[in-house]
Image (cartoon, rainbow, N blue to C red; front, side):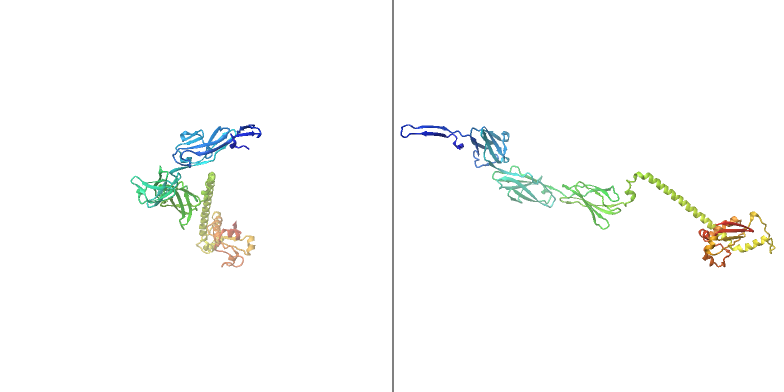
Length: 509
């Protein structure tokens, strides 16, 4: 099996007869072996050890063996094709790649391949190790916030190849420019300690490193900023206070040079227990929705940053007492006209009822007053009755008494019989007749005046009648009104019989 190594070799066949002089015959041909290009990559010039310093010029050679001839050559960096770009310092020339003023970003793996009709062949990778001077790490803390009296540690981070570096620190502000000696280093990072005792100690720190390639061109810069704890909040106002919730709105104070957060602590004013703790990082506005109705609370508001907190501001909040009409205010707003009408109607009824009560009391007072006048005449009943009886017969033992004539308009009532009705007599087992004589009263006047008296003073139960000092047997004359009240009278008394001479006038009680 021919190989690429057999390409171009001569293959021959020779015949020779030893018995015949000059009888040798020979025939042959040159081998033409085709194969895929075999490619090798090398670093030219003085960088054959693949060690390159930043800013050097480097060229790479792509060597190959192929049959038939190579048609194209392609270069690769980190497995990506490379195109010529003179502005970037990349030039392609036949089988050579030229890299001018090479930067550390071009460190990595390089390769090339060649193509013919048999196929494509690719070289092995070559790593360019580009040595460079120290440089600052891009993503690191560059601003340090501190207060007077603090000791700040500032970190300086660099990259370099080789990584063995030495550091130099400098401090600079508008008044001072000096070298710092209080720092420690390890590998590619260094830490400087700065004591900030006064305002003049704040400023800018720079850090530089150097290695075998050279000194860092641009130093790392760090800024020391003087900051303070935030100032207290101001103009705190409680708004939209209801039975259970409120909104506390304040204005923020100066943040001290740092981002600040706002805190609210709610304490019960009685036992000083913590009820609510809220943090707001956007502003000093707080919505409280779970407070007890009618309670009194102490609200403490303060702000804080990484260097401390402000003096707290205290607000006393008194929650309104819950009322049903407030709770249902929005739900019943549509029924307010109807509610007003109902309330007006109820007030009118109460006013009418008050008038009726006043009228009843006045009427009862008048009745009691009239009864008192009527009862005053009971003591004279016996004497007047005897005189009336004598006048009726037209005779008198006293010659000084003038006989009285009957006049229908001036009739005198001689007796009043109060009889229990039939049913009540059966219930109580008594018959009661009370006779009272009144002078100068018509039957109508007598009944009216004595009804008031009876309604007030008459003894109305059988037991009371049986124990009355003037009661004996089933019938007894009462010479004194003793009716207690109208209800008891209606229970016991049936009707009034008023006797006027021979005529009886009856009225039902």
